[in-house]
Length: 317
Image (cartoon, rainbow, N blue to C red; front, side, top):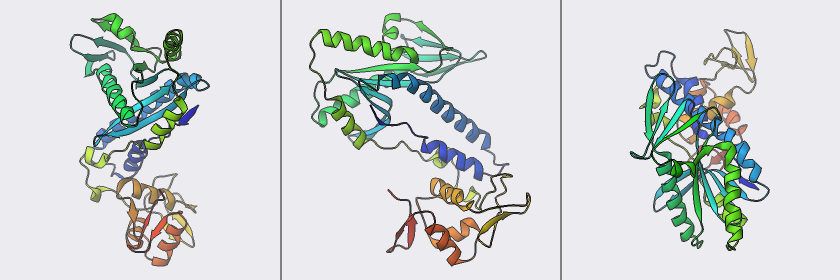
């Protein structure tokens, strides 16, 4: 069964909000757009691989997008499959073109038809994840559980090549469609050797309870000051950020349309980009409304939590 589903990443939501609220002439906008496309491509690759690992859900416990903490540091895993006999970590790569795994220099090289790019070896990354998860499980009284790592290449059209030890790569790297088959092969070996079955649902539940949502400060990543973020309520048709509040609706002068709930996205953008709380005053400033009463009604309609002590509104936990 799947006990931790893959959801649309908060980092992508932040990029979407940022691109809505950066001036079109902003000097770094092309870098932000490129980073957004890269993140989105990675997410789509994860969904492609999920179609394959979902085939295992009837006989194993599956968790997507897991982030755990160990000794003050966090580590993230794209997919964890827990079966009757072992734990499998799946690191997903959504690359097109030609991938060459260099086992001499422990490097991944991608050729996209025009240039070569070098990347940190995903095998090294997966090995580190497995070691950290093993220690994390040991801390939670699960000792000596077999843990294996696979690198899933999401696109069937991606060519995989090896410079060095082909057998080493063959056991770890494969197109996503072969992941269920490989795990089934391991399971048959364990079963024939009379390995002790695992309480995979129980292990998965503990991991799910402790897992956090992956997040990062994209403004810091791109060195963007919050003062450069454009305020205002946006028209979903023409992207005008200067909607005016008139008799309970938001009016867009350029396209002559009105919207009842356009403020909802603006408030969400504020939480994503500015800070995780908002006051009546900052709400008025961000939405360009003058009435405290109007701002209060808007915030009440968002199902937020009001902190009476500090007089501010927060998202529910």
